[in-house]
Length: 334
Image 1: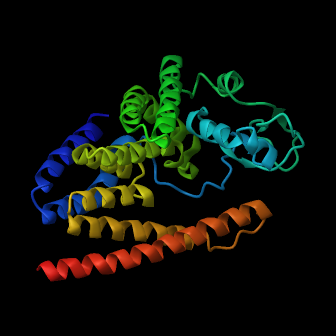
Image 2: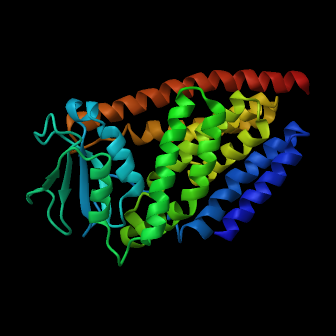
Image 3: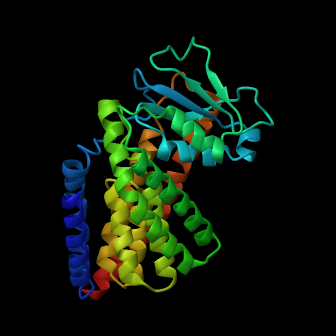
């Protein structure tokens, strides 16, 4: 996607200029918030359409439910859910599921065929869906008419697995290894990931949640950013933070907080203030979204929504104190 590449190159040049002035850094941040989303929408989606509710079940699509019972979670169900969300072929809607009485054989995945009523049809259940069994399931779900090519899919899986290794290194605080692994993963899988999103969007239409499928890329950029901050690579961290905001279409509060952390590390008070305000706006969006009634949802879904709402409210309040401090600093320096 050459236009997106040009966008990144331009962002990089702006960031070099911004390092000389707090005002320029803030201006560059504001420019990204107002322009990058338009560039992504225009050139990546055709590629990525605007995000919408992920609870809607796309018609004529396979519904893939990953059991989230305590037993399956102990067996690695969260990893299976994340992998299917990132890698499943177009026409597959991946979501959390309840217990299907497969305890001891997790992770258990429940599959409902194309075009069937999810309330009445008997589902297909697969047990121990991880490792080779997960790859086999991905192959079975693929449709040659709508999916990306086999070579691109192999690259996507390879890059995704590399990102998992990078995350393990990051969590172990082996920051140099994490940075290198994230670079490799993104280089290998970025284009296949975007191609898959384009294919998914063409099948899912207006109801497709465009950001959800590339969350793993956003997570990779965020972690790479913070790893670079840990080794004092401010310029590299800045690039990763901006990439995270672009791929999340400026809707990921933690990506915006990465940007704020970069500004704080470079003593850019104005830039930190702008990024923190943008993050607060996204936490407010989450709080509003998960405050809405949830008719038909089970107790697990309601508990998860309450947890997200509470966390958003808490973080938003803490950041409000940070905003006050930053505004005082700016006033005192003017």
